[in-house]
Length: 170
Length: 269
Image 1 (spheres, rainbow over the protein chains, first blue to last red):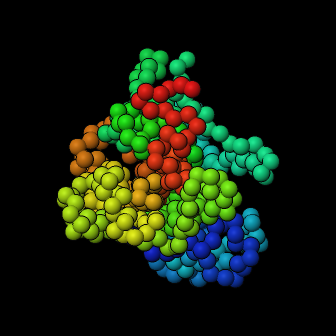
Image 2 (cartoon, rainbow over the protein chains, first blue to last red; image 1 turned 135 degrees about the vertical axis):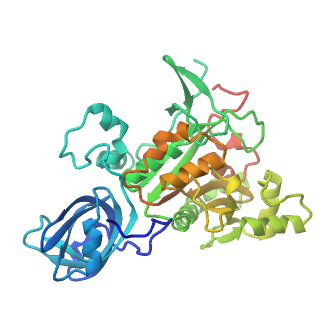
């Protein structure tokens, strides 16, 4: 069971990188923040997929290398718990992105209740009605809004963004 | 734009018929932007909002444009830094790019020096009382007092922080003293142009704050439930863009800071 104290209004750890920014931090210590996308606890090793606004990275905790408290924390995690991870970025032949993070410290800042109203990974199918009610738990990204903004307003001679008035007589 | 219930409880809303239901024009994107922030981490929006207050003051409109941010893994202190950087950037941009226009308006625009001063609410009350104003701890400032305070503080822009819980919305994160909260106002050239808070992301605390405010927590169930499945701590603010424009351009009446002012009497053009 989770051992962390009741989450407070801030965190001890401060994020240093997004998960998309780890390429240049090989063999360096980083602090990441995000959601538990998936967690697997095996005999000699635990895996945590940590998701943030920029992507997902694998956090790997081998029993031989990771501190006992970290292993215990990982065993108590559920999908969508919110946490900070301090760890070393190392290269990996197995992890999808060719890198993984070996954790030295975990700080859980918010626990997700179980069961979730839907599966944010999309592995389990969900009714449309449920998806619409809990859309913010899906946490999808919308890069299209950024690209249309770039299209309309790249320079001074481009389109001026107006927000027209709602109240009118007709 | 169209919502099924009051965003913050309290303030007056425009209601409209929505087929067989009653709906309201949103007075704030508050609850939705929080849900966006726990989904996308960092969001900003510029949108119109509506307040059905029957004021006829030079600082009041019934439809305004508001610029908002909301950020996960951020505290009140973090988003105050974003706000002061945005303000310094905005003022400098106008200062550098619009010198001709400012001259025509007779406005000498002063740049901002960061970090801006943080004045505690209780200090502000004391300063005003010493200067002869009738104000008690727990009361909000009148527009006149806000202007006077700016003179007493002696800064063109400053933050007012550590507000009493009773003066801010139910979702403001309380401080450990149990009396004040992580809320701030930004006073620019003597007018409140922006306010923000760190929000409560813990459902049990939200429910107890709703009750303390005399609100029925059942009416906020879907909002409270949104924080049950992995909500990071988060904070945000909004800027009233017409107020900001009014103060940057040195206008006395907010109706000159928007193209088509919507006040109690005017809905055309």
